[in-house]
Amino acid sequence: MQRFQPLPRRWAMLLTALSWLLVAGSAPALAQASDESAGGETIDIVAFGDSLTQGYGVDPGKAFPEVLQAELREDGLNVTVDNAGVSGDTTTGGLSRLDWSVPESADLVIVELGANDALRGVSPDITRKNLDEILKRLTDRGQKVVFTGMLAPPNMGADYAATFNAIYPDLAQKYDVTFYPFFLEGVAAEPDLNQADGMHPNAAGVEAIVERMKPVIEEALGDMAAAAD
Image 1 (cartoon, rainbow, N blue to C red):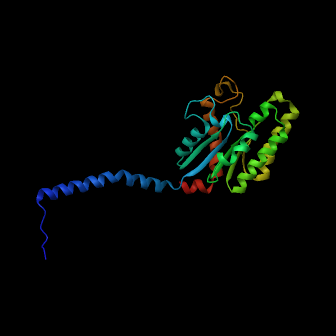
Image 2 (cartoon, rainbow, N blue to C red; image 1 turned 90 degrees about the vertical axis):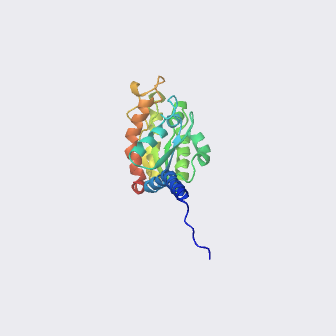
């Protein structure tokens, strides 16, 4: 039997150095794996809406979904917030693209639609029917929903406004989803928080919306948020 021959000293030193390099090189990967494990599974949120969601007129990274994601992460939640907003979308457009815009894997869906219906004078009966179907599909999937309300502009008249505005609380109650009565609460008609058109929030306005909505969204996440801590 061949006896084990000790390595020359210089080879032993070289192998020792290489072993330390391998350990050092793997440290960042190990740390990343540890961080991911500590953070738990990612909570997937989809913000499904129109230009108010899409981020019309604000710089990249300043739209509602991106700001919300950053704020929730600051609170220690491992979340992604996907931007499924389409500028100019009506509830009819939203319904037609629901299945490919909102994956069934999403844990929570924020529904923000209807402003363009009111601006165009779409019959409230059509708006109600579309939103009813959107909420039905999402809740049938078993997805959590935060449903945000919208108010008709004053120039549409009192009768139109009364019929349109009632759609949101009615459907929120019907489907037992988390309800945020007015997406633009605290921002609408505030010049400092809106762009020159008076309808779309500026960056400060988006931050104000997120600040108001964030507790509602965290409460809607419930056990998922607790598990991610």
